[in-house]
Image 1 (tube, rainbow, N blue to C red):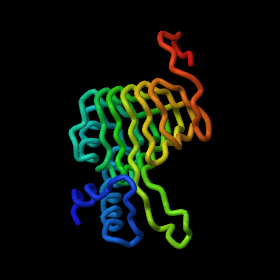
Image 2: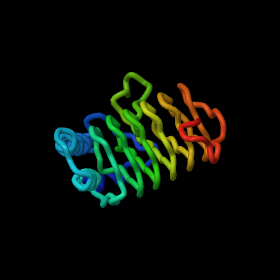
Image 3: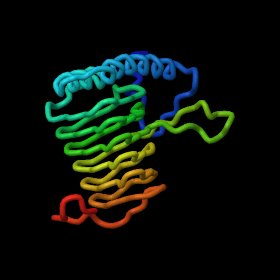
Image 4: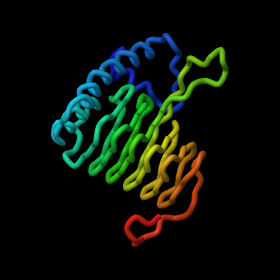
Length: 196
């Protein structure tokens, strides 16, 4: 099975059994991602070099407006899709096999985790993995240590407060916080610097 065949199978709700052909391809892709992220994370790189390494990792041309502070970790890399003017801060971890879609103008804080795989609840089937994509719409801000779980869409312009665990979709222009994340209020326009 090729990488392209594997990625075309990773539709929402797709199940991969431990030890299957897809699982073996997942392992191969993870080893490739480890090599690239090891290079990214273990010495200084210019902005241009980071963009080049992220383009290699994702298999897509990353826009020159992209910014990142390593280290960065991913289990796959080939199913990350990044828009323009995106910034990813240090320590983020993307489990992207199910697809991570980051639109233009998104800010992602330190140590954010975006996880697109869940395991079966039944202990006898727990090695099975269920894939669900994550969509981060335009101008979203994920605070430090945010976790976004499989299948979640975060609506345009929303803010997810530091430490939140997002288990369900968040509407546009909303501030959400907590574990699990809950809507706090609408985003205010023209607020003072740093005020939330």
